[in-house]
Image 1 (cartoon, rainbow, N blue to C red):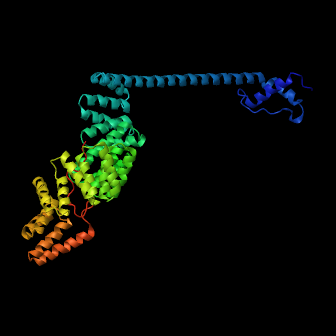
Image 2 (cartoon, rainbow, N blue to C red):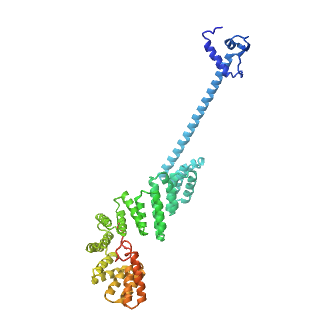
Image 3 (spheres, one colour):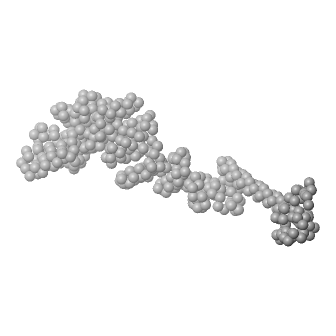
Length: 458
């Protein structure tokens, strides 16, 4: 039998029903297996299969599925709207709380926040803002409790870490405060509040350690902070000065040079670097840096003294004398410039001029090792060996590593006939001379005593 023109459409429908018959729930099979029922087309025409009913069931299925999909979409939109509304409410609460706090109404702010926290107890931002209102009210204990809860909910929350860091800093818990600021710096190295807090905490910590004479611990704290703030010139300055105090000159030079590159206009950094360069015996660069500093601060007595020491080491006595004189003119009440002037006169064999200068130093500092040695040498030149030995013995107690004191005491004891003690002193002087030509950073004729007026004027 020929298939009519419209048959392809019916054939397609029937084939679809063959694959998807839901009502009959069975697989169709041809009845013409023995050829008794005619062609395949006649099979699909058979009313026993009720193909139209199958098609209707399929259509019903898709309508049902479409309804389910629409319901799901409506539910999702509703949930999204609810979430958006919740986020909007949270933002509104936080804005309201901040506005009330800014208006100096901490009680009203606390009420708004507490209502929100009743249903959102772990919201770190709300907890932090409430802690800040408690701080405004002076209740640091409640604030710390709230901040601890906020960090338990969100350990890396910048506001919570910064606020708790400030609380700990005010309580002088510097290491703990540094932990909070460093948490924020690990997230944002450029956080102004975290950088400021870290610098304040480590500076205070280093100062307290120095006060307790824990110099190495102070250095370690500053070195640790440098790993968090590698580009902070103020921190590098503090670290460089501390390294200089401990005699770690190469580290001090490297750190201060880095600080100077970051902030070339900072005169305190320039002055500190000039001092380190003097200690390293890098006299040309030390002189240049002292002169650059004095060009900006010509009235700084300490810088004139520092430049004078550099010139004295370079054997430029006249220029050094002028710098020490200028230092004394600017700051008459001091010791080191008077001592250096006395030392210049002593080396020039101007004993009459040297003596009053050394006495002026000893009036202010009776234990000044350099001035005591100077007076001992003057007494030795006068052949007053007993007085020389007394001055030099005192000098050794004040500056036991100062080679000239041992050397001249050995000579004085020899003149006094005390050969055994004299040999011991001369042997020690020879040993010290091998180890050092005077203490680091000064000439062999230096005092061995750190200048008391060696810090720049602010």
